[in-house]
Length: 130
Picture 1 (cartoon, rainbow, N blue to C red):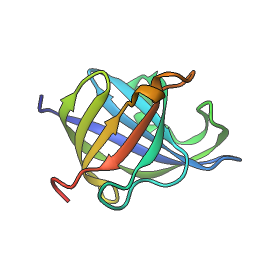
Picture 2: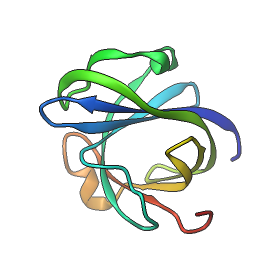
Picture 3: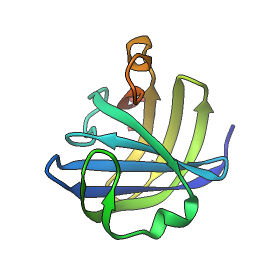
Picture 4: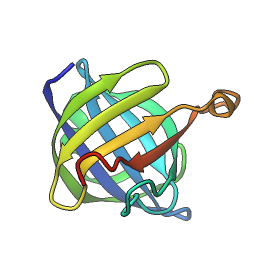
């Protein structure tokens, strides 16, 4: 399941500062809110709160946005392309080619993550390419 798509990460300055990760899959932007920081080390796990899908036309959006985790200034933190390595209903593996966010990453949806209003995923860097 290879293919090159775009990704973008905003550093969202709200009362609850966080990162917005958006990856383009099958013509839509899948979105996750990363409450603290992005994973910097292999197997370092981060909570990723699934947000509403977005139209790819907003990938260039800057300024003040409201993503359900807060309203505030969204600063472009990184963007680039990625290759989708695996996509299932509870596991997405992708390899990014960004300036700051690069390498192979895994998004996992554990059974407990399906129980909340917004699905709770786990994001981590995979050791396979870093």
